[in-house]
Length: 394
Image (cartoon, rainbow, N blue to C red):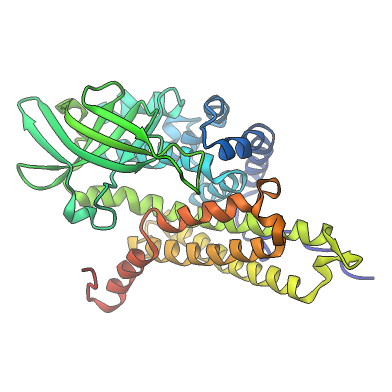
């Protein structure tokens, strides 16, 4: 008798490194995501609209509490648990996972890491409860990878007020966020500072970016800042240079590596299920050699990606994770993810380009994951500098 099929993409059992309690909690989260979040996902992606009812549903998961336990149930989770949580969110829908990641990782992370205790107490409880939604405004229309040294948005101090001028682009949640963390260059000392701009502040305008083919549910915005006046109380007190901004990105870059893994995992799951159910020439296409070759190549990529992100999480938990390791993980996993989604779409044939089979969404979304939080090229140069001692940045 043939051996039973092994459908799991976690072929080497990396989830076994979690405790029994963590695996049980993740299973419950997966069930909730499948029943409450997934039914909203494809229609919202197709319409390129954000389903605002999802905020209340996601608030019930207390996702922020996993990262900042003092604003949750007070019980810290392991770094590895956080990685697998990212996987679960993204395998259901990358767009809604990005909404959560921008809010919890980038916006809350900036305030948590760069704000004073008073600022954390003022903003984070409502953000943890998703009563207030955050955004993170760093990228500019004329500056992406070079924003560290070429930031054009300026901040000028006038007494107890800061005046912000400039523009930002690709700002997730930007059209509806209650709090936007804006990064601007102080004209006095030429250093980057962080400011929390509250919804309704005069001079702040957010316009939705139209025509996206990836992460269509995410409401990315072009933002203009025209003499936006922000009180000194809203300047993040622990941010004194771009180095502090980079610290936030280093933490979230590892999360993007897990996100890339999740996109590859879901693509593999969809492709494998299709291969064992779709029949051609009187037999499942999964019985054909070329189809098995595609699936095995995907599984090999996924297994290598698992190894890298799991080890990165372990290093971060031990206080030994570096920005260079996060950069390598992001560059490697997003490249392997891109291969996986292409192979999966190929396996579906013509059915791979319609939303009904879901793979088309993951194929398109992979392009955004490949590019944000530092392109492959920029992350490659970060790692290249660390191994040669020479900077190749222009």
